[in-house]
Image 1 (cartoon, rainbow, N blue to C red):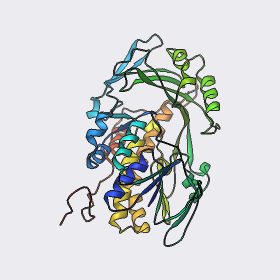
Image 2: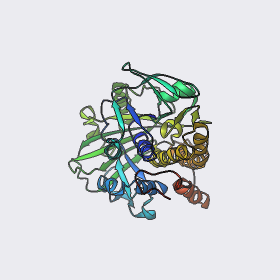
Image 3: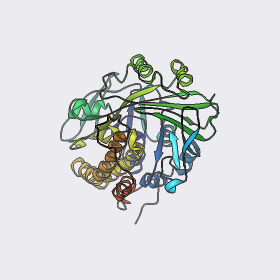
Image 4: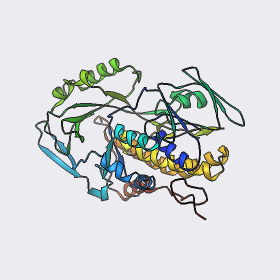
Length: 394
């Protein structure tokens, strides 16, 4: 099998495919794993998946160890406090919080000895028939695979090749986020700090390396037309949109040009009627991005990888059956998380005097929605499938 993308969804899928007996190749466009990135969380059923993978200790060892978060005013005075233990570890600051790049490294280290990784290359063409998929790589290699899964993110090239142009599936939610690492000259010590103005925000979060911190900016943007690979244009846009933002913003921006891991993109969701076509399927943000404002993108990727591999293996690697069962099991879970993302985006919109009020998060309906977003998918044990990481059940 070919898995396209080596961030989180791809290596997580590789873990399960290898366990269920498949031979796996992962191809990644970048020349190496990308470091840093935003902090990502594992809540609810995603924590169970990490445990089933046997990676709970490794993931926790790489966590940010954030104690909680303070929202602050322009002078740095604390307005509100959230703790990591709130809501049983599934709150605003999750019990398992880890930088995207660190989680990617844990998953890669877990799979690299049993999985073929190809860095610095990508799929240039693919053509499928009833028996397999012929793939032409940008580097010139031609190979044939039984199945191909695109786990290549919001701007998935596999999705564009097989299902159509990005604009058909991307739903911009009216906001943009930027992340990059900075020296910890702000005295952060296990506590995240966030400052908000209408339509804009700045955030600093601690990381394991106490000499560094992660910065995040968010701003409202009704449209977004900056190429996701044009870093210079992205930095210009960021400077324009956060000009005059209070608190520590000028000090954080002073490190923008020195950041080795700058990332900016629209807050968007991927909405599709189906996540597979023949012998090609999609996983993670490529299939069902819920946006960073859902807080569950990583959870969806981890859970989706477990379910996709399990359903394919249980179906004897028949793509029609396996992909259909994967989608049936995952779609309600995905839709609940996408609704959370949309609601949080609406809550950050800039409202005029005649605008409708923002979402009310105090009702029972929201408690029920959060429950479905955290735990709204059943994880089978796939007892009939031989597991190379555990004794085979008789």
